[in-house]
Image 1 (cartoon, one colour):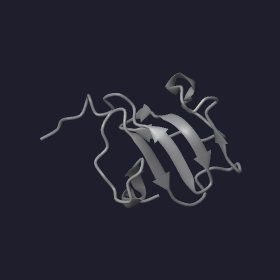
Image 2 (image 1 turned 135 degrees about the horizontal axis):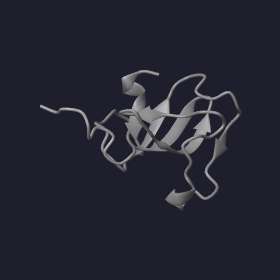
Image 3 (image 1 turned 180 degrees about the horizontal axis):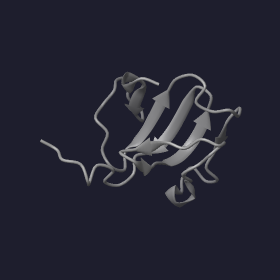
Image 4 (image 1 turned 60 degrees about the vertical axis):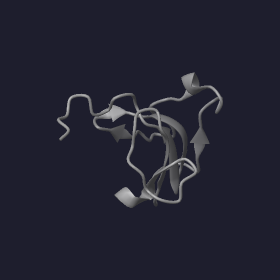
Length: 88
Protein backbone atom coordinates (compact mmCIF):
# COMPACT_ATOMS: atom_id res chain seq x y z
CA UNK A 1 0.00 0.00 0.00
CA UNK A 2 1.02 3.62 -0.37
CA UNK A 3 1.27 6.27 2.36
CA UNK A 4 -1.69 8.15 0.88
CA UNK A 5 -3.79 4.99 1.36
CA UNK A 6 -3.44 5.25 5.17
CA UNK A 7 -6.22 7.42 6.60
CA UNK A 8 -7.81 8.13 9.97
CA UNK A 9 -11.28 6.69 10.53
CA UNK A 10 -13.85 8.82 8.72
CA UNK A 11 -11.35 10.85 6.71
CA UNK A 12 -11.11 10.89 2.93
CA UNK A 13 -7.59 12.36 3.11
CA UNK A 14 -4.34 11.11 4.69
CA UNK A 15 -3.46 12.62 8.05
CA UNK A 16 -0.44 12.26 10.39
CA UNK A 17 -0.73 9.23 12.64
CA UNK A 18 -0.92 9.69 16.40
CA UNK A 19 -1.09 7.08 19.21
CA UNK A 20 -4.56 5.63 19.73
CA UNK A 21 -5.90 6.85 16.38
CA UNK A 22 -8.37 4.57 14.60
CA UNK A 23 -6.83 4.16 11.15
CA UNK A 24 -7.80 2.51 7.88
CA UNK A 25 -5.34 1.18 5.28
CA UNK A 26 -6.67 0.75 1.75
CA UNK A 27 -5.00 -1.37 -0.92
CA UNK A 28 -5.02 -4.74 -2.62
CA UNK A 29 -4.12 -8.21 -1.36
CA UNK A 30 -3.87 -7.03 2.26
CA UNK A 31 -5.22 -10.36 3.51
CA UNK A 32 -5.27 -13.92 2.26
CA UNK A 33 -8.72 -14.54 3.72
CA UNK A 34 -12.09 -13.12 2.74
CA UNK A 35 -11.96 -11.16 6.00
CA UNK A 36 -12.29 -11.29 9.77
CA UNK A 37 -12.73 -8.89 12.66
CA UNK A 38 -12.20 -8.50 16.41
CA UNK A 39 -14.62 -10.38 18.67
CA UNK A 40 -16.27 -7.22 19.99
CA UNK A 41 -15.80 -4.06 17.94
CA UNK A 42 -16.86 -1.88 20.90
CA UNK A 43 -14.24 -3.38 23.27
CA UNK A 44 -10.66 -2.42 22.38
CA UNK A 45 -9.40 -5.15 24.71
CA UNK A 46 -10.53 -7.74 22.13
CA UNK A 47 -8.43 -6.23 19.33
CA UNK A 48 -5.59 -8.60 18.47
CA UNK A 49 -2.21 -7.96 16.87
CA UNK A 50 -2.90 -10.65 14.26
CA UNK A 51 -6.11 -11.36 12.32
CA UNK A 52 -6.48 -13.66 9.31
CA UNK A 53 -2.70 -14.17 9.35
CA UNK A 54 -2.09 -10.41 8.93
CA UNK A 55 0.00 -8.14 11.19
CA UNK A 56 0.74 -4.40 10.91
CA UNK A 57 3.78 -2.72 12.42
CA UNK A 58 3.77 1.03 13.12
CA UNK A 59 7.19 2.34 14.07
CA UNK A 60 8.21 -1.25 14.80
CA UNK A 61 5.32 -1.86 17.23
CA UNK A 62 2.39 -4.16 16.49
CA UNK A 63 -0.90 -2.38 15.91
CA UNK A 64 -4.14 -3.78 17.33
CA UNK A 65 -6.32 -4.88 14.43
CA UNK A 66 -10.05 -4.30 14.25
CA UNK A 67 -10.80 -5.83 10.85
CA UNK A 68 -8.77 -7.31 8.01
CA UNK A 69 -10.08 -7.71 4.46
CA UNK A 70 -8.31 -8.10 1.12
CA UNK A 71 -8.88 -4.41 0.28
CA UNK A 72 -8.79 -2.79 3.73
CA UNK A 73 -7.28 -3.07 7.21
CA UNK A 74 -8.80 -1.23 10.19
CA UNK A 75 -6.43 -0.75 13.11
CA UNK A 76 -5.62 1.18 16.24
CA UNK A 77 -2.25 2.98 16.12
CA UNK A 78 -0.14 1.69 19.05
CA UNK A 79 0.74 3.93 21.98
CA UNK A 80 3.95 5.85 21.37
CA UNK A 81 5.21 3.89 18.34
CA UNK A 82 7.94 6.48 17.78
CA UNK A 83 9.21 6.82 21.38
CA UNK A 84 12.74 5.67 20.50
CA UNK A 85 13.07 7.79 17.37
CA UNK A 86 14.37 11.34 17.21
CA UNK A 87 11.92 13.98 16.08
CA UNK A 88 13.07 17.40 14.90
